[in-house]
Image (cartoon, rainbow, N blue to C red; front, side, top):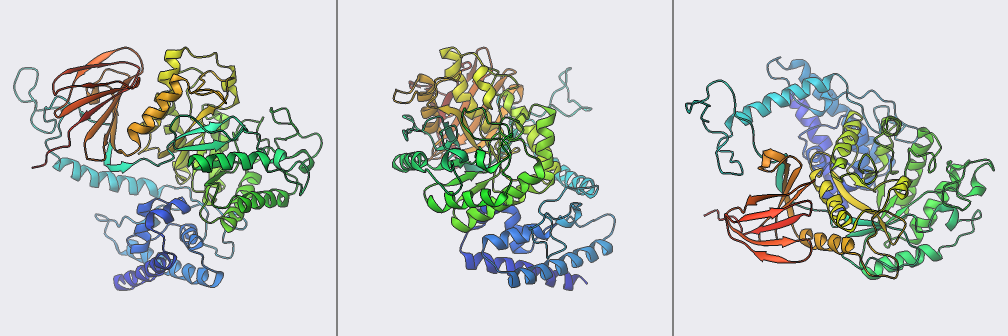
Length: 579
């Protein structure tokens, strides 16, 4: 029985690995295009696990360009592998249950058009009771691993895992010491090159005068109804200027679809708040939508790097349709973009009003209906609870969002597209607060990179003077806030992040944060900041340079006291000597 199961697993894995090698893409590239994690793609291709639903197999297959006959063969192999896994579960002893992807049981019917001829295919799965058993098994394994860890060192150098003196000076025999260390850590990982991005509020084609990693075209007079004011009549002049400007500046561009033309909906459909004839409802005939998406993706093949399939869903001023229609729009748009420009990244609609129950409900419904099956990124509007609040509040919101998606089978990585239209009602920030907020916006996203999988941050907005934080007016020079965004981009451009932590766990006051990196030469980099107040710390071993956001630098030595406040600083230390 086990031999048959192994043979079935190898059959499916062999077919997937053959597809990967034939396509020529890496595991990372396939993961990026399918919305799966790299480790999942690797496990499936190596036969280490069998996908829960055929939807995961189909997504890999579609990326690799298979036809229907080959897809049918993959489906049969997937069924046989699944049956073998079921047989193993029946044969397993209670003390050693096999932990396999099949233990996560789906309960959703496939959407129309999503491998409907394969009855086992489901675009995305919602986990049921068996997740609890898997979770307990994983916890048990982690407990064994954790028990072997010794010598975990706190910021002060005290070994947390060793024996700790109790209040009387003797050994503490009843209570484990409080754990000290970062909130998360991982092997060094380079940030996405587009991590530090901005949303463009300009139709001129001018680009930011400070360093950024990418630009997002929205509120740049490129809504659907502006580009196609009449059916099959197009005006690409503005989008051409923007695409040309981004190309000249060497900046990856994200185009945002939205703003249905008045001709594509009934006359009484509500208008968007932009003062033109663009509307909030989906088009009456979805063929009009699909044709427009195809037209844009074909024209800008190789010039626009990614497409976001609507803005600010959750706000009735931007989208007033239902989630079932939106999922169908996303399915059609994704297919059109991938056919016209296979190298472009497809990002789902950006969801907003996520501090509110209704916004969260719509996000969950979109995920439950399988919308994220068709996308490689999940844009969301992460921002403080109220305008002008501390940027670190978005850490809590990112966790709420990821929990919603996790319950609906996780979804792809998050892209933060900034606040909604309501930001215009926030009073202007003082120069000092603006400078700190602009930088901490991106740093708060760093804190959510691992668990919440935040991959890009688009600051809202570049070019506008009607927002509470101006980074650069069109035709003018960058403000100090803008210049500091550029400095942060240079600090992190070639760095690899390793950990983030906050508060007493990393030797800082409550509201203190630290993210650590390795530089190009493996020098150790530590970015520190506070939500409010001022503190000082002892510079770590190997410390040699302090960088401040005003552009100044200062030589420092190990053990020297370093002061900082709401304005982030960077401490550079020599590479760790492993000899």
